[in-house]
Image 1 (cartoon, rainbow, N blue to C red):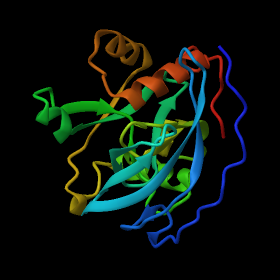
Image 2: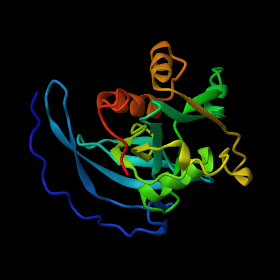
Image 3: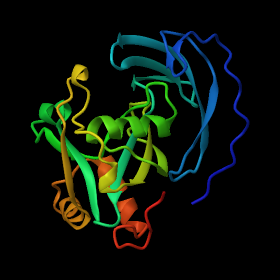
Length: 237
């Protein structure tokens, strides 16, 4: 498989109106960007966003985006925008355990699935640097005061319809780092149960589907690939 080289992207030709650096509010803009096709033809085509209409402005923003295709036609796409997010897998390499959280999630409930998901601590950056937001979320949700983070990638969580880029981290801890009860922030209506479990049990739960949250599976597998759960990687200070 081969990809043709891209060209220089043109600067935006329309005015931006911003409420926050990452949140455009009902604007019209035109710029070109390259989409590298990996299909049979390997064709690189030009698309441009011609218009963004905000149809809902709440916790997240929902936009209807008009896109000009490379063949001269147009199409509409709906985009949800709430900015960047972080997720962290806290693990104790000495006791070979991880701290996860269990909380109700409305989207699985909407689908008729089990609403109580076991997950790594996560949340929005709220304008902070990703590492700062990650440490804050872990403290709020688990009561752990982390001393260091190990970056594990920045990933698009649902690029087909959402702007969220998830900054992922691993974080070693010890029992001495437990400084609070956790449980989340009351005025955000968070209902969080803190769950510490053996890494071997977490691996089994991934295999049998009891852990089904994508970011959690990713970080547990990343930890496993790095050999941390077997003691190959020591605790970072």
